[in-house]
Image 1: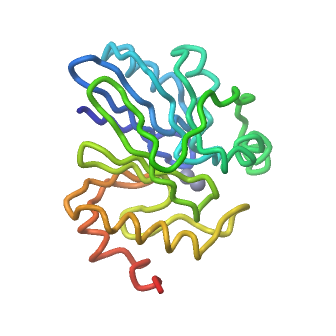
Image 2: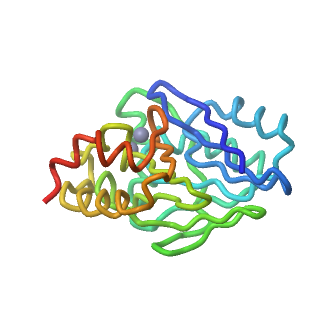
Length: 208
Ligand SMILES: [Zn+2]
Ligand SMILES: [Zn+2]
């Protein structure tokens, strides 16, 4: 497996291009902005993009979807509980002073336990509400993509529409019960491991 990270947009969101080296089939996780840079990488590596996965629908994670849907024809995956936020993402971006194109309709709704495959890679969907109602993490091949549920040393805010501190606590508990050596790729900031987060994440002390 190859994982490439591009930091995109004014909110420095992590877009991950994840692919099977053998078949070149790829997932793009959270294409938030700067579609040209993402497309360049897809072209240079010769990838066949199967899915555009939204860990959640905040505008900094979905802004490049219109362009990428056009250029890759890949299916857009999202948890249905974030659909309301998805549909409001453009207005929310405008509210914060950013401009994104109208988002294409999602193609596939995913839920807890679903498996997403690209080539020889497979990732399990873990539904992790808290930062947003339909937040998901992807777990497979010893790595975990956490979106804005878990960062190195911290967690996502719960004061946006649909956020819930109590749900975030439950979601966080599930994530730290994964194997300690799991590599964590968050939606913002550097990568980490479950073991690091058990020791260093401030949120550990907030759990009931
Ligand atoms: Zn977010
Ligand atoms: Zn974010």
